[in-house]
Amino acid sequence: MTTKKTNIATVLANLQTTSSGYDLIRYIGIPDMLGQESDLILYVMGKKLARQAECISIEEIQEFFQHVGWGELALSQEKRRGYLFELSGSIIQARLQTLEKIDFQLEAGFLAETINQISEKDCESIAEIKKDHVILHVLFD
Image (tube, rainbow, N blue to C red; front, side, top):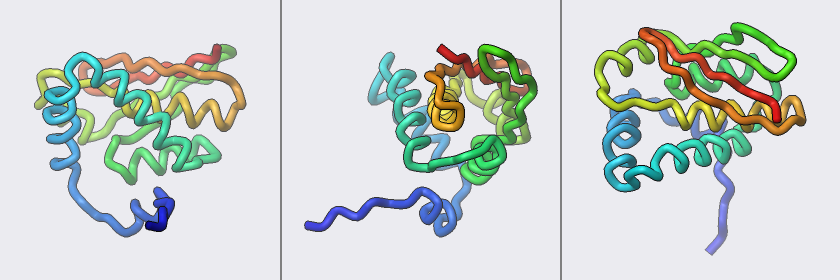
């Protein structure tokens, strides 16, 4: 059997879906199956996705977030020890208002790995949930 590497850009260009199915799997299916480990697994999954997506700029990261339905990502502050990003938009507001237990570990992992690739500095990312948006802190080690 031949193993074919799937290009993330090709998948995104060819698959057009709503995020409802994704949200069901992410916020109900995965936590139910994985329990307390789901946060860590989603974070690591985000890092793996970033390695395959190969974004080379902040603008490409923002486009990726928008295209996959993760929300509108904006760089709000650049610091000596990292970056602050704001994740917002109607999809973020809807999730925050609708879902009881919500996390942004997938997005945080993706952002940490992508900024690591761009800056060539080890990074970690933490999501801080606000009333109608999310602050993603990307910190350099």
